[in-house]
Image (tube, rainbow, N blue to C red; front, side):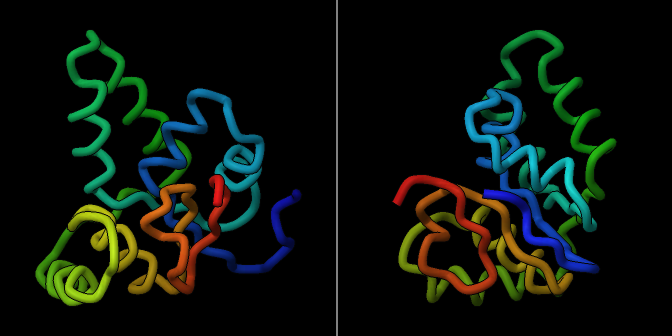
Length: 131
């Protein structure tokens, strides 16, 4: 599967996608992250990566450095937080972090790149995980 050739594509890279990218497990992840278009990462992904990998000396530093090189980190502000809260009220699965990532994509006219099943049935998602 190749990345769709679209002009002005905006991809919000979910934490799941970053982790799969570093593992080299799913070819499509790299095609999107390294492919055309604007790449964004929600600041919540930084917190999730720190939570998961922060106990391994220096590993999160290099991960965050790569995220900054390949995407623009989007901060959480009041408007985005309120939108995420409203989204989380209606999401069937997932947590507030997922709602923040999804709201980030909506606010920037983008799509979430993920394989996290919490996003499977939502519009505006490029789902590359297992069904």
